[in-house]
Length: 207
Picture (spheres, rainbow, N blue to C red):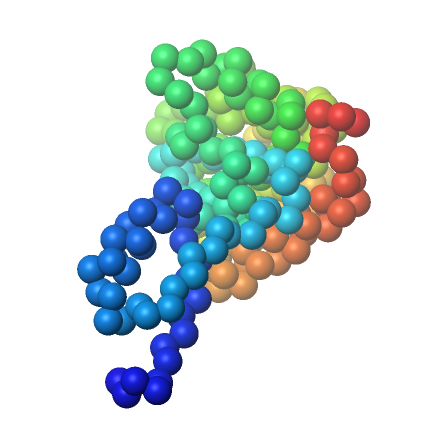
């Protein structure tokens, strides 16, 4: 590279990796002559929140990707996923009830093993966490978006659901397909969530 040439790089980086970037710059001063490290922009809806409802052994892998995309779009603090956010030793039932009650949108991620496990209907158990979270959202009239993953194409039939969850089948579902369609489908989901946020600009806790 000639002295008159300039290499301009823009990068989005998580706040907790800021020091790592600074160390790289200090180790290679010849590559970085003029550097500005800017904080990432504020999330577009700082008072809004999204709750991801899912079963780990049904859709954990794709939920990780969904979480990353939504966090990049709406800010990590605005997206709740129990694995990420519940501290050790805390009563997770109380945390989940509080988080669902305060969320603005609940995403019900439904994969091929969402309804049943071998010789057991999961949703028949009133203590099932997935059932509890969706029931809480429906009872509080919180928007619930069913997300079909794992090549699932339709919602379960009403007869396979407990009565408290049957309103779910009337919610417009979004299908999230594997690559190469994943990002296209997530973009459609983000557009839908944004429309809901614009429709109700105040956070759910204040309405």
